[in-house]
Length: 306
Image 1: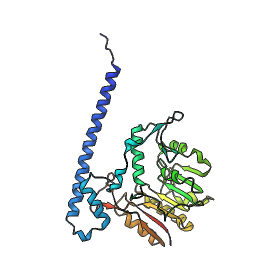
Image 2: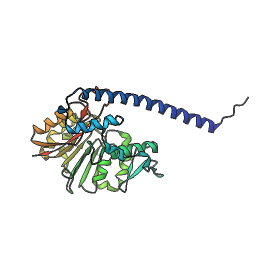
Image 3: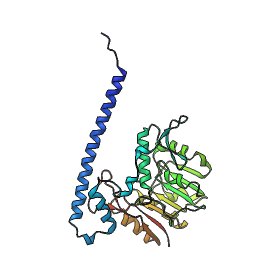
Image 4: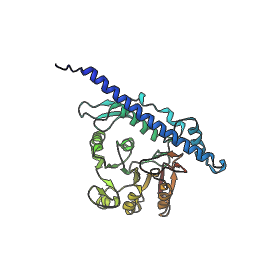
């Protein structure tokens, strides 16, 4: 007896199974987020109101009336992934969005719905009110700047400033991003250098220190943007000479690990830099690390030599 394969039925069942799995994952995540929210509110309900600063009060007010979010603030409600258009490049096969008129590419094979969500989260990160916003009107780039972008991923930060600066070094350790970056920055090949390395305090294999990399470079960095998943201290250990010799400005993330804000701030203050924390707070549980009181973390600091 021959078995007649029903392709449409098979596709429908696969899609249903996929959707059911996604619903289960969402249910698990929602339960975990609800437990975190309850834990945070219980902690702050036990603290005298006078001991809680105004920015935390605003975040707690949001949290009491909304679901848990990394950015506990009303500004996130402006963004909706479903309103974002995403496309496939027929020549390269890479997905992309149009960001301020320029193509911003994502990893090959990324479904368009994931591109929409990712791009929406990037817009949230760089909103004027976001604790993760890198630049401000008073801390910005200039035409003679040489930018070092550490932890590039899709490259939205450098794409925003590419026409406003002299040169950009893009450091990204994930090989899957490299081809997408080459496509995004193809119109500016003459002012971009892509480096597929981990930035650290050692020089071996896939790891390189900033001091080693820039030891013989003609174009020296005037501004660093650093978002390297909790390895920011390794960057400082391996880049101190370069930062100090060039009086480089640095915008550096401080939310990946508890204590990073205090430790990284002290590093710069002790070397004669002034620091400016970003506004507001983040709630970042991270992966495989404890997430305990006081929970709220400063997203980043902006620093420059006094």
